[in-house]
Image 1 (tube, rainbow, N blue to C red):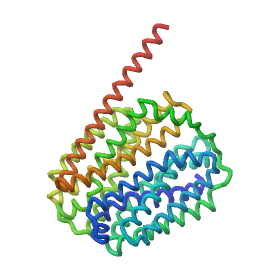
Image 2: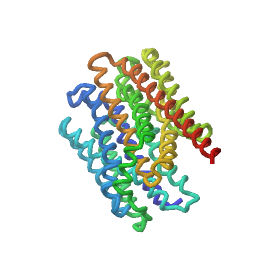
Image 3: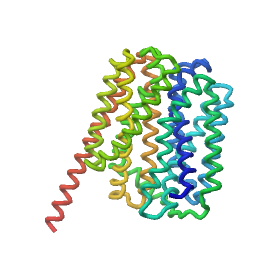
Image 4: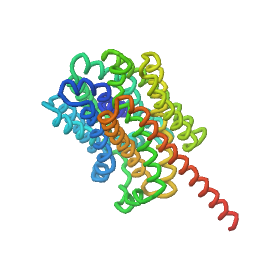
Length: 397
């Protein structure tokens, strides 16, 4: 594997850290800036909206640019956004910084896979993508808990300063190691892109993605205050629990991918969404006991992100059937759907806290995941109907 992939992995590590570290810092930021927990939670939502806009819109606008130029521009914007967060004098400026960083995130993951595969031969493409995404997995296991610990002991601004340094290192590494003459596919036309947005089967999967993630983030956005106020953990212990969660996420991601390969995306997603809804419902009762809370969080992590491989594979499979000239666009829009779900979930969680209680977020999240399960079953039924129709047509001819 070329060393340039390490620069992409470092970029993914920095980006993954800045996206999810905010969850562990919600109580700290709320206290320091004098805002409510729901207002601090909006920093998760607005970042996700930046990703949702950045992935399809900015990727389309930069479709004709040299890939290395886009990569360096994105990492410069990412570094600038985190520096602005470090220097933010108040809540409003921190919001602006988070949106800017989210825009960079969306474009990076939209083009990152293409760049990674262009660096290697055809038989090593999957390994190249896996190596790049290792940076995101490592961020969940180490970067997020470490960033949470730094923010709790040295102030949340210190976390963003360190992530800025990581972004700068990734920018320099990409400038030095990534070649200029990357192969580049012709960008999809506007008509081809719009075809993705008007294809009912793809829209159904995007809804599955948004609801599946939205249910998780209704509660996950406020995991730190739940662990402190309900489970009784000290602020410093939350970072260790986030480490447990991150390890579980890494294992669940691998397991979810193997399950989707073995049983197919729809059966795998049905299992994962069912288990995720059950775990969220269970957390409503286990959060009050420290040991039970940690065990539940451990299981939660495995199922919360185990749906990612299945959802991405399913989108690609359907796009190859219905919009074969815009598979990359369809895949990128699913990244946007993930983040729309994160945004909706964290906003809904804030509304629940304002009108109900902190511990109403898990069971409401479970109900949203059950909606994703219902759509998954519907999509599977449509697949079987279409397959039966194709067989019938083949027999007639």
